[in-house]
Amino acid sequence: PPGTTVGPDGALVIGGCHVEELAERYGTPALVVDENALRARARRYADGLADRWPNSRVAFASKAFPCTGVYRVLSDEGLGIDVASGGELTLALAGGADPEGLVVHGNAKTEEELRMAVDAGAGLIVIDNFDDIDRLERILAETRGREQGVLVRVTPDIRPDTHEAITTGQRGSKFGLLVDQAREAIARLRGSDRLRLDGVHVHVGSQILDTEPFARAVEAVAELGEFAVYDLGGGLGARYTYDDRPPTVEEYLDALVGVARRVLPAKARVVIEPGRSMVAEAGVSLYRVVTVKHSGAETFVAVDGGMGDNLEVSLYGQRFEAAVATRVGGGRPVRLVGRHCESGDVLSAGVPLPDPRPGDLIAVPVTGAYTYSLSNNYNGARRPPVVMCRDGESRPVVRRETYEDLMRRDLV
Ligand code: LLP
Image 1 (cartoon, rainbow, N blue to C red):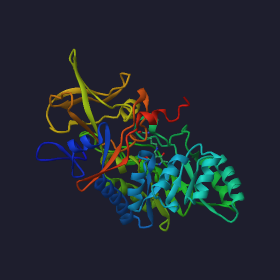
Image 2: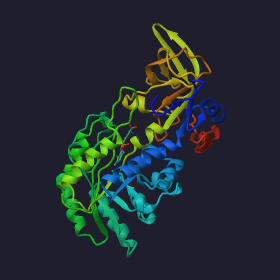
Image 3: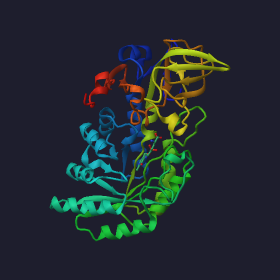
Image 4: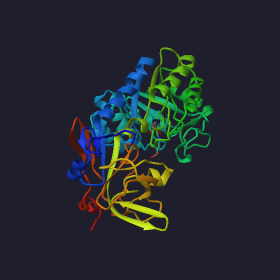
């Protein structure tokens, strides 16, 4: 499967670690991350952008995988971090993120969250609405002497071809300001003593599989005028299945910078915020088969996880490949389902698996993005651990939840 290798015994190897040993040591379900793959992807992005546009920065859109282990690795690789809440901000700082590289997002940032961002010394706060401006003015009036860099998020009315729930730049989106209002915000910020308008931001959606919407988004921000910073958002699709053909990182950067060279000021700084495409392929979910059921023409292979640890299928109809992790390849199509109490709890419909049996280890690759972050306790599920593997060594960066964890907030 994409993003993994197979050892001589036919079993999956992740970051040099044998899959069965990982499952025995950490249990299942578990989310395993190939640390070198993650680091390589970070460098490919950062170097790729810097080669094409030297005054640039890659900020990881951390909503895709917000745990301290990931913040640490990507900060160590020199990336900035995009956070979208006080929670992500707290985790990012705990993971060693450099405050100067923080880009703070949110369409409903509370006063408390804005204060956290200012106090942390966040490099950029993204203005999504006029209340953001009022609140920040107020907060900065209290913290005398400090100037805060901000960007204005524009909604350019671009609708990429992806799942409706993850388009963000169309007219009618709750995110950002339509062009006229963005101009008004820009004018207001130019008159501010405490807020320093560094530039503009645009993000049009996620899991985008062609480069055209990105190119149009660059043109849209260019029309707002000359600034020091242009943050062009994220959104590049990941390769989940053999059939998916998203643009490569290089094709994406070529398209973006190709337009930027034409329409942006040469001295400006370009920021991008990849989330999904940074982490998706570095992650593999491991499960055990609990039961196999033949029902009419269908074979149901039910595992010990599901929509508690991966909502991509139920929420967005995302397709995943899967394999019996110790004998990869071959087999007949089955319906790989989870253990949760609803029929939408599917991991992969119609995936070929070679005679799966109870106790078999199942690997679902390309699960690094938006699985951990959307994991939940439906049916009292305990959220799985995150394990980093590198050069044959594994280390847990998040432990599995316990039943005690489940009761921790209940006032019994
Ligand atoms: N920048 C901003 C301002 C964003 O809102 C997002 C994603 C990104 C960057 C990163 O986009 P990416 O490169 O990951 O496509 N929960 C959904 C995904 C929602 C994405 C929201 N914003 C899912 O699980 O598919």
